Structure formats: C-alpha cells, structure tokens
Amino acid sequence: MDELIKTFHIDWKLLIAQLVNFGIVLFVLYRFALKPLMKTMDKRSAEIAKSLEDAQKIEANLLMSDQEREKIVLAAKKEASQILEKARTAGLQQAGEMVDHAKEEVKGVIEEAKIQIRSEKEIMLREVKKEVGELVAGSVAKVLGEAVDGKIDNELIKKSMEKL
Image (cartoon, rainbow, N blue to C red):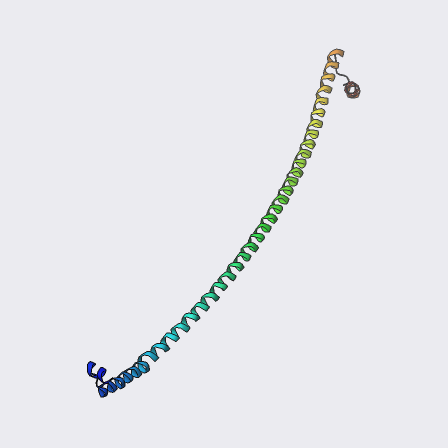
C-alpha cells in the first residue's frame, strides 16, 4: 500500500481534509438544499394528489348534475306534452262548443225566418182575399148592373173564398 500511496502521490492529511470538506459540503447541501427541496416536492406532490381527488369529485358531481339535468329535461318534456294535450283537449272542447253555439244560432235564424215567412204569407193571403173580394164585388156589380148592398157582398165574397 505504501507503493500505491507513493505511486499516486496520496497525502493522508490532505485526503482526510478533503473527506471532512466533502462531509461538510454534503451536510450543508443536505441541510440547506436537499431537505427544503424535498419538503417542496412533498408539498407539491400532496397538492397534485389533492387536485386529482378534487378533479375526481368534480367529475362525479358533473356526472350527477348531468343525470339530474336529464331528469329535469325529461320531466319538462313530460310536463310540456301534458300541457299540449290539455290545450288540445281544451281546443277541441271549445271548438265543439263553438259549433254547438253556431248550430243554435242557425236554428234561431231559421225559426225567425219561418216566423217572418208565415207572417208575410198571412199578410199576402189577406191582401189576396181583399183583392179577390173586391174583384168579385166588382164583377157582381157589373153582372147585375148595380152595386149590391154590403151584406150580400160579404156573403158572396165568403162563398167565393171558400171555393178558392
């Protein structure tokens, strides 16, 4: 070993001083660089893990809210279809009522027209009877040559009217 030390020119004192210096540098680096760096890295790892957990929670909440949204949309569609069905039913009912009301109005108009036709018919018959009576009286007066009294005229008119 002496030969090895002489061949490589190793000085024990210098070697021990360098080992002490190396130990001091190693201690200082560990204490002031590596230890704070490890704390920072552990803290960062914890933050990343927490962020991942939060992301999973958010994803789960998002999935739940999507499901709730789908339920709400389905409920809204169901309610909308019920409202439409009620509106359709109400519309049909109202249309039926309007048709019934229109039929009643038409019946009323027809009845009024029938009454008016009857009254006009009666008026026309009276006028025709009056004219026929005057014609009969005039023709009797021409045939007889003179006017007959009112009583005979009325009897002749009644008989003529009964024949008609």
